[in-house]
Image 1 (cartoon, helix red, strand yellow):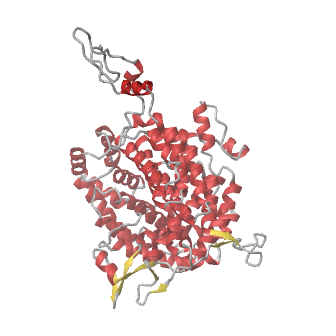
Image 2 (cartoon, rainbow, N blue to C red):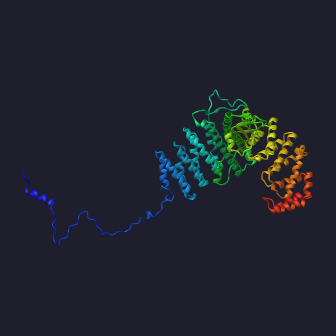
Image 3 (cartoon, helix red, strand yellow):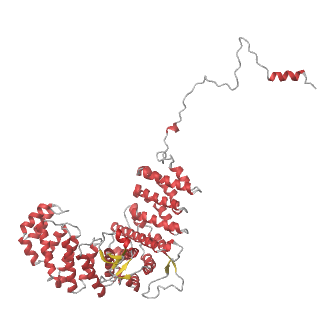
Length: 591
């Protein structure tokens, strides 16, 4: 059936060709592009304003806000990128640029300290290290955030987080000792929890028993846990020693800032009230670490027995030659050094906290006068056992003996610290004799590297001169005079030894006046004055000898009076004005 004519016509209309006629314009197409428009600039004032965080950008053009948002991402790679970017911003920008963003950055990065990923925790600790170095004390208003997260990391269920918490502790004690010391009450408890557990009732020795060490806590023991290894315990002891040193420094600073009076000490028994400004008063209240002696006593009862348990794990061997003492491995020497350092710090903290000598604190001396502490003292002096591989690395260290594949080296610093502590705790005749022999060899030997603290040696010598007989006293004076002659005249440590000369010539040690080395020492002292190579301490010691009317010293000084005056006035004395030098010379050289 064919379509109608109408249908055919409509079909042709759809596809009909438009016929162009002369004089008529062509209709414009619907998709035609117009080019007759005019353009003008639209300026928004907001675009001219620079955003405050646009100046702090990483190499990838990420700002602080974007990086902080990545720290809460589920992917560890994204979180790592966020911490790394913030670390980059801290390193490349100045303190003034970073200070406005301190609250947001610290609050954002602090939770990463106990992230499950090791790389993120390491980067977060590096960020804190770089940030504190850059901004310094400006971090103080926000330090509570860091300390709180550190405390949480130390008691975290993840043992890897606990291990990395010591790295952050090392950063804080190195850069902000005053701030971290204010959180001593919390962090010291965490140290104890990190290394020990509560003992069972059968293992516990109660405090009610007199003269007994409290072993209510025992060391963690787990072969599958790296935190129970001796190497990690050594690391913990090192951080604990540094933390106690920071506490001791802060305690001394507070007492110097707010001095005690006798009446306040008797009535209050604690820090006196502060009547100065709010800022100083607030700092003083926060800095009152161990203001309660009970807190210190509780900590000592916990940590000192743990130190004895750690020492019990150290392999101590007797020397095979005539040097005496015992040998330790490298880790054993470091362990002994940490134990002695911790006990020494506790000794000084106890003295500051209780306002009395630690030897008068019964609860403190019970711990240290036990048989466990005696085992540490009886091995004095100690030497370090070196293997063949260690000898190649430390070829410059003086060797005592060589036999087979090992040798011994001095541990002078540890032995001096142990001797000083032992003299404070007890003064048995056996130890006195050992100390005299050790110190005399130490001072006479000029080939040693002198890594020990000479001030501690002088303190021990002064204590020994009060109790030892004449023969041993002459040995120590001889050793001190030999050490004095080995030093350069202008060396600072040389003046410390003059305390031995002054002690040996006072009225309390008349038995040493006829000692031959005293006469030699006086001759050498006058020779130093004649050469003009003197320090203030030497000049003061010479005046004291003159006041004591030492016959030989007076005769030698008056004989060389003009020469001494000319040399000292021409060379001068370091740290003294010429007028002060002239006054002291006038007093020294008068008839």
